[in-house]
Amino acid sequence: MPAGLGHLTLQNRAVTRQDAADLRRFLIWVPDPRSRRGRRYPMLPLLCAAASAVLAGARSLIAIGEWITDAPQSALEAPPTES
Image (cartoon, rainbow, N blue to C red; front, side, top):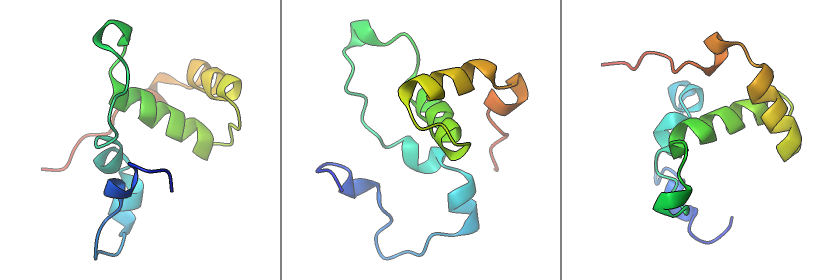
């Protein structure tokens, strides 16, 4: 695991189905390395879309971009959060 990503793991806790279903709980902790001027889009939605594309079979940056472009709006909308 690359240095700096170790803090993303759950220490002393088994991963549940809910954890696997809601990647946002983990992706929100990924630091944004972009400068303020380079931030056109928020980091969390970009990571969620990219992760979804990879889970759907995309294997390159071009394929990820194409998947996001072709995905129906319903697939790109964030599911409601549990209270």
